[in-house]
Every structure is written in C-alpha cells, then in structure tokens.
Length: 289
Length: 331
Image (cartoon, helix red, strand yellow):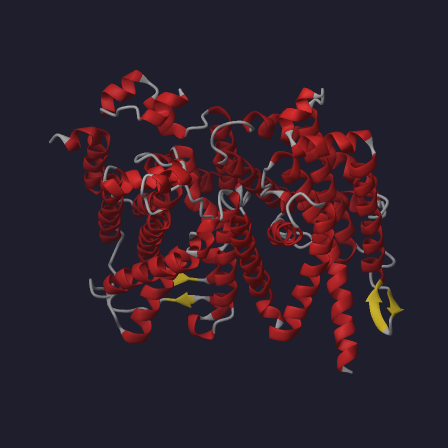
C-alpha cells in the first residue's frame, strides 16, 4: 500500500517537475546570455496561459494545437521587451535597475491581466481533460502525460538548437564572452533579443501545456517564478541539462515534502531547501577561489 | 542652523504638514496622509539596507508584518501597550533580519534579492498555518478602550500626528546616519566590497547593522499600521507588498536621503486618486500606474527623481544640496 503511494508521489513529482524544468530553462537562457535575473518569468507563463485560454474559448482551438501560435506570439513579445526595455539598460553601471525593470514588467503584466480577466480562476475543458490512464499500476491523468511528452520534445529541440545550429552556437558564444563574440562578428544585440524571445517562448509553452489540467488567474506566475529560480540554482546557472534535472528534482522534492510534512508546508520545504543550496553553493564557490 | 540649512525643503514640508489638519478636517484626506506617512516610513527604512548598503531586499514586508503581529499579540495576550510592542517588534524584526540575512550576505546582487523573497514567502507560509496568530484569517484587533495606553483613538487626528512624528524620527535617523561614519562605511560597502574590506571596514558587521536598523524601523511602521487599520493577516507578507515598499525608493532615487520621501509623496496621491476614480471597476489600476511610472523612470531617469533634480542648478540652489562624487562622475 505504502509503496503504491510512494510510486504515485514519484510520478506526480516528475510530471510537475517537467514544468519547473521548462520554466527554469527559459530563465537560464536569459540569464546565461545576459546575466539578468528575469523576475517576470512566471508572468510570461501567465500570459501564455491566457493566450491559450483565449484561443480555446473563442476559436475552439485545442490547447495543444494553439502551442505554435502561442510560442510565436510570446517570441515577439519577448523580442519587444528585450529591444525596447532591457537592451538600453545593459552596460549601465548599476544592475539594480535591471532587477527593478523586470519587477516593473511583472507588476504591469499581473495587473493588466487583473483588469482584463478579473481575478477569476479560469480553465479549459477538453474531451480528455478528465481522462486517466494506468501506468505502473497507478492512475495518471492523461493531459498531464501528454504535456510531459511535449515538454520532453521541446527540451530536446532546444538542446539540439543550442548545441548544433549555427545560431545556437552564436548564442552560446555570446554567453561565454560578449566582447569576444562581437570581435568575431556576431551581432550580440540580436543574440540578446533572440535569447529573451526564446526564454519568453519557453514560458509561454509551459503555460499552454499547463492549462489543460490547471487553472489560470492573474497571480498564477508568482509561484512559478520562484520555483524557476530554485531550478536554476539547483541545476547550475546557464546549464540546460542542469535545469532539466533541477526541475525534476524540485518536483520530486515538493511532492515528497508535501507527503512527509503535510501539503500546507510544502512551500516552506521548497524555499528553505532553496536557501540552503543557494548559500552553501556560494560558500563552496568562494572557498574554491 | 548650519547643518539644518541643507534640509530647507524638508523643514518647510514639515511646517506645512504640521499645519495641514488645521485647514483640512475631512477624515478621508487625513487618512490619505496617514497612509502616506506609513508608506514613506517603510521606504526610508528600506533605503538603509537597500540604498545605503546596496543589498536589495524584496522581502521587507515580512519585517513589517513582524512588527504588526508582535505589537498586536502583546496587546491581546498580555495587555502590553502597543508603544512597548512597537519597540519589542522592532527589536525582534531587527534581530531576525540580522540572523537570517547573516548567511545570505555572501550572495550578491540579484541572488540576495532572491533569498529575501524566499524568506518572506517561508514566513508567510508559516504564519498562514500557525494557530496562535490566527492562521490565514489573521487577527481582528478587539474593541478596547480608546486611550494612549491602547494606541486607540477617536478620529484620525492623533494617528496623523503620531505618524508624522514617527516618520520624522525615521527620516531624521536616516539623514544623520547617512552623514555619519557608519553611513560612509555603508556606502563604501555598496560601491565595492573588496575595497571596503581592504581599507579595514568589516563588511559583514556593517551589513548586519544595516539589516538590523532597516528591519527594526520597518517593523515600527508595521506596528503603527496594525494599530491604525486594526486588522492584520499573513497576506501582508505577499511579494507584492514588499515591492510596494521598494517602489518609492527606486522612483525617488535609491540611496538618496530625500528620494524615498519624494517617491512616496508622488505615488500615494496618484494611487489614491486612481482608487477613487476607477474604484472597483479596475481593481489593479493604481498598480498599473506604479509599474508604468517605475518602467519610465528607470528608462528615462535611471538615477531617480532626486538624482535628476540634483542635476538641475536651480534646485541645488533652492535646497542647498551639493553633488556627491558619485553623481559628478555619473554625469
């Protein structure tokens, strides 16, 4: 009996963790290239969820089919944010303004959503929303499983893009050394725009994949932003593989923590672990220096 | 008069504020001023750690709530006057800040901010599930006799003057601190930690002192808020409130003496005006305005309003302000 519960907890942990991984990867692409901590990552997810909601509720489009549309719209939004608001601040002496720019964007998106959609919880109903299938002797919700599959696919595509394609190599070069990248003829401002666009698209994709079994409300992003940071710190800054593993680990940690100390304290478990890792990591880094 | 001369603007503002209640008796207007004093207190207190020392806390709402809860619980459970509760809450929040930030001070820039968010969220999570502090429902302060002992008065007038005095104390402390040896050490830590420790400044000790002072003043403001509004809940620690504490400082000019005050005086009337005009039709209206102002200021005047004003000659002559070395270099 108990082992059955543990298997269920592990499965849920992995399925949830996939989303944290996707959010963490988006954050990581942006951080890796520009060394910016993007405080509005969760709000980009929220925008993605509302876009999917609109496509589904007004045009009757299946949420999974709206995925490419959402990804493209989010890329454009990301490019506009980067070009208009963030690029001009890069290179300024104080990085505090970069923090507060993304904080301002977070407030703006949250409250625009509040005005446009009110604080109601919304979700989409599809024919398969409540379907379950049996896996390892456990009941698993079908949309969660589909989403997880798509998510793995997106992760592989991103990894292949960054590792193999020429543009991906340019992005990585910019993240390793912007001045060197510029010297060999890479337009680094374009890479900045591209990486923020990719980060935004990943958040939007996570939003689309989340909606079939979750609900959207204007403040939904806050929990995901914080968890995305946890993932990034767990998996190492700038690393895609690390973010994926970190996301799964965080998902497991959260569901296990909820199982052990009670669901009402799962936030505390997540954040205290985060603090411990953040601080210990820094101690080791400064000792190694 | 010498050192006071550079506070000409502030002193005339104080004079006006002392007289305001003699001309305006409308409770609503007094309420707006009371909230303004409260917001300004928080922003000035945040500015000690965030502005002077350069450690951006995005979790200060937790310290504010700590002051609110401490003063309230002491009054309800032990019948201790909120005046003492305010001081106890301040001490408690200061010590808590020093203890929890101590390990975090190895983190720099955005990582420190992240750690403070995580701490505030953990506190909120714990308070939401803690029976003694009323769990998620929070605490409604009971109807007690209206007296100085209970920090409970008829009308808004006493709250107005108490708020003004508290703001004066916190603002004055900041202004004195900023020009003291300690203040220079804080700024040195902010500009370059390695250089600071090279010239013999104990970086960690000064950061701890700044965290203590900042959190303690924040908690005092929180206690004032709790006794005025008479209802507190764990959601006071939400990240959004922590950001609202920081906004006036950023918009007014981070690390400057007058910036947070100016920011608060700019933002509060806008927020109240929008609240009245838009009412319930657009609930987040004033926050949209805040966000737009914040983004515009960062984009157009990165040094904040005070940084911009100090660059104008007529304002320097009026206020007697002198350009600091940093401002001259950044010009």
